[in-house]
Length: 318
Image 1: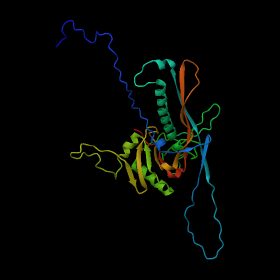
Image 2: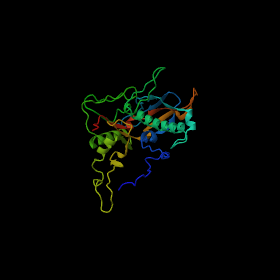
Image 3: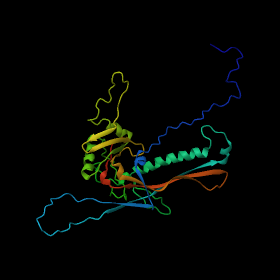
Image 4: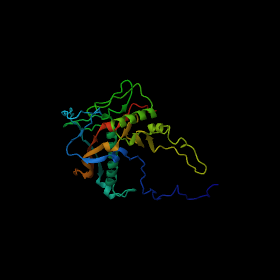
């Protein structure tokens, strides 16, 4: 088929209005499972501190009638602390924006400020999972919080050569294995779960990357028919909601902001985020023909007792 002669088609037309949808589509991930689940408390200083304690091991305890009672040696509590970290970003929009007609948003400054707040949550989640020692900070150095890996020392599995636990007080980072990474496995998981239980912990959540989650889907003892299609069902089921062990029931939560090599088995109520300044957006001083808004948060991570948690480190990621 061909056009009749002298057809004036749309390709020659001048003045066709732009057809731009009034919706902006963004599928960038914004979930922050650990940060969202962690209890929030108020920090009142840039150094947030807390104490931990332990009971002595059980012992034979029998005494004769009427004997004199002697006191046993007592151990002082352990005082720990973490530094607050400032998370900050800003947007600058020319005031010309107020006069132009835009698709998908009324005001660019409001749209961009919301984006910054969402991005900042991801930055916080990443910092909480990061193998980063706390930094005191100074007039020229930013304060930094110590992330989860730096606190875990009692219930850990890691590489056989360079791999090593940190001190456990947030002052130094873990030593990463570089030559003997091994695959995450059910045996590693069960070892850490048993160790946490023996220490008195009650872990309820496992945070891990998508790659490690795929390995967890292969754990035996689950629904081994989860990949089968049942007649008339039309679904392939391949999921692992919880893992029931003699040491407790754990929910598997895939996360995007942790290092893929790390797997964390935690008791959620043994972690807390201490907030010195809650997330807030404020206008900045006007210095020209533009509008500025700043989004700022200041907080730190509190590991109430690391023995209630465990970590499987130095796992292969491919």
